[in-house]
Length: 73
Picture 1 (tube, rainbow, N blue to C red):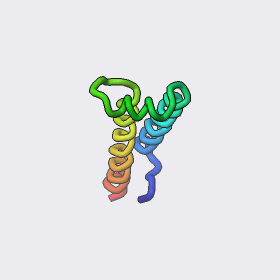
Picture 2 (cartoon, rainbow, N blue to C red):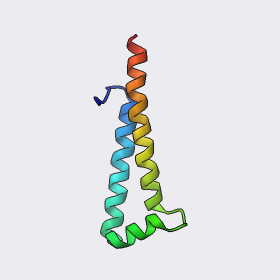
Picture 3 (cartoon, helix red, strand yellow):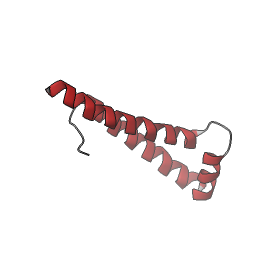
């Protein structure tokens, strides 16, 4: 899969980088065991937002490839 060069893929990269920064911050503050516990509990917290942000970035990457193909044709 090739990442298309348009604003949609740039937003996907932005979401992925922000998610990595949040995940690394949480691991540095609380440790990997607590972060995994935060991902498995029922409450909405920053670890769940990291998963949501990774999902959004994947959706944006997939849409950016479709956006590029429809724009060329």
